[in-house]
Length: 76
Image (cartoon, rainbow, N blue to C red; front, side, top):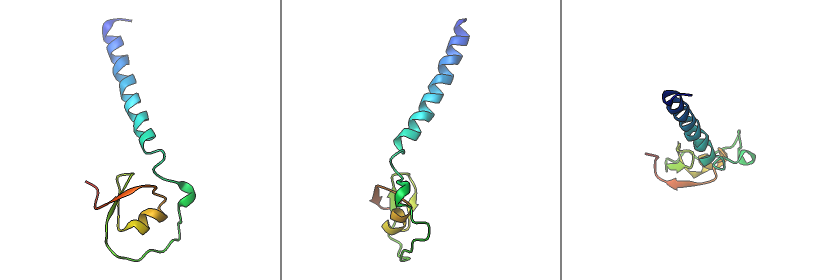
């Protein structure tokens, strides 16, 4: 293998590592056992930012989506 091929292989492996780590960060963010597809929430806009970087209308919507952690306010 020449130097260019090694550098190319290193680049590809680095990109794959970054994408695989991204999935690990959000792995525990959604608890599928807590998802309530027909859940009902009051339509009051008090936004929360879920650990999945999605803004939910309020904590009820985050909870029925199975989100395990959130913070008050919209996501950036």
